Length: 352
Image 1 (cartoon, helix red, strand yellow):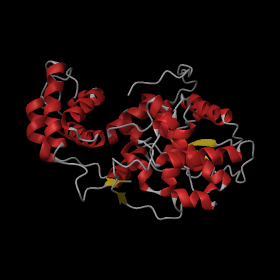
Image 2 (cartoon, one colour; image 1 turned 135 degrees about the horizontal axis):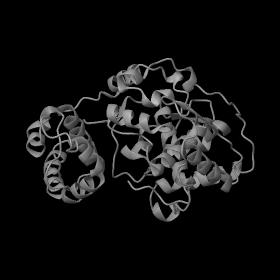
Image 3 (cartoon, rainbow, N blue to C red; image 1 turned 60 degrees about the vertical axis):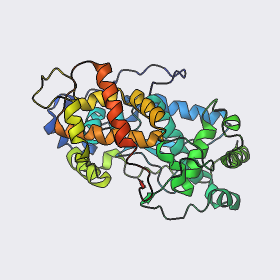
Image 4 (cartoon, rainbow, N blue to C red; image 1 turned 180 degrees about the vertical axis):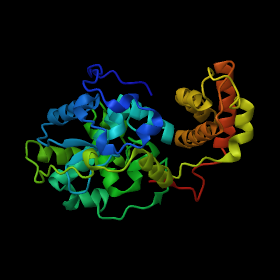
């Protein structure tokens, strides 16, 4: 997805150099997270944070959330603040994240802003105790509802807003509120027109009313706690990613192998040829758009299958050779076949 042109200042050069920047990958993977020495102030994230703080000020909200680096995105229960994953604070760590998990969540400016607005929904909920109000519970449900291990979204539902991928608003009442708040907060989102006639409009209007009520009011919860702050995490990069791969079950199907081996060159190909995984990541948006149009499948379905294929390409060490346009057309054909067979059939769930 292209970066948005939103008046954000260009990314600044980092002010701090780190010894580990020039370390071999193997040595760096043995470093504890707390030894990285990263701060938000030394990164482009500072600009992203200032942007969303300005969005809050523009709504006359006196809520002043705090931010810190940790091992992943989250807003802790009872803490009106947001943790941001450490890898976003340095380009080398972003490359490692991609190599380990195939994606960098929040690595683009537009995506980073979307996630920040979502997490601010959780933070402002805790800052003002909004989930304790009967009206909030009547519209969204109870935030105390246990999170499911997985959920089956209804992509056609108009009872929920669309903000993050995977129809995340459908996973839990607190996520429903956070997603609705994020849509409401985004400047020029034109949510009244976009959701006209949707049951989700009732939720947006309720959020609009709630924010008008608390505008100019100080939060009742002013905790500045920073759970799992980066400077206290003793886990090494190697162990962190081992746990993440285990947690997210990053294993890829061999069912694509015959097609992938036909499309791409084997590991013995010239090293100057780009990796097949890099090729698929670079053309992901155009490929998924085309296949979704051809097949009528939900784009989420197509993206999940392509992600699986990309991971298998990396495991096989495949490389992309020949005409990029011809290769892209062949990939689209193969992806269309696999996408129509697989995701979001009855009994298949989205993992949280």
